[in-house]
Image 1 (cartoon, rainbow, N blue to C red):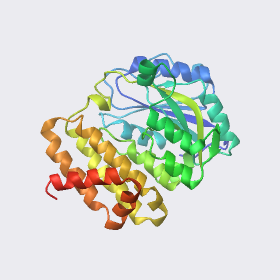
Image 2: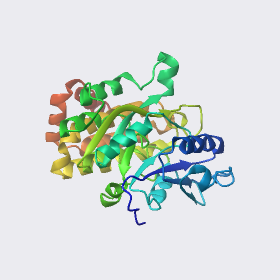
Image 3: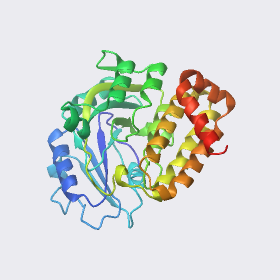
Image 4: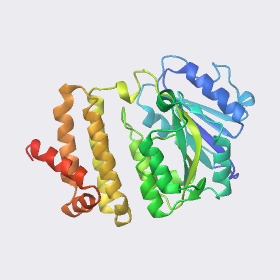
Length: 330
């Protein structure tokens, strides 16, 4: 798909599955914010109507080009984002889930992206509904807020140095906290994993590994809404969780094979280990042996030099990995 001439054009890609009411709320926000020139709704085989036209939305109402795509069967949010990317004509894009909310600060973040001459992507903070409910504040969990402070200090926004990007890459792998330059994704051949869950890990890490200019903006641009829904990761405990093994192995191999990426390796090992241990606390006990086998395959993929590099940085966590391998008979 040919991009528009206007560099100051922003598209929003919205994967959706059986959430028409949430989609209506988000499209209302999109129309009121007035920063989007293009809206691509990618329907992942819903059996409830998620066609914007049937929900009462037209291009005139939205003030933007509107594209509706529909898969004949459910294939996951990763597939929905991938097919939508091929239809985007805007120079910049934001992936955004139908059941999350745009924050008022996104307009200023978009302007900052433009003022920085459209870097490969601008990553921004978000507010998590769980933190709001438990602590009464806007933002996300302490460890992520700490990474933002380490990366930016007191600066509201900045083009990141390599060391700062390495620090920030370890935050949660969400697809909707970044404004991308569309050609960056296409030229770098970056896409989501077409898996039932964990489909955004590949997009997140490859973005950091392949970008030459990354901007970080400490303002909040999205509100992540956690609810008890069957498609949310926290309530999916079956064999679909096993897909994370091949994803981690693919990214681990890329990090090891490309010398320019190795500086990110210790952060990726930490991320992968913490993700695997989180999964062990949330999966069906029946699939735990298979999941542990995938963990072992990932750890054993690391070279002795890479693991020593990680051990010098995180000795306690490295010791836990070795203990796990010994307990599992490796």
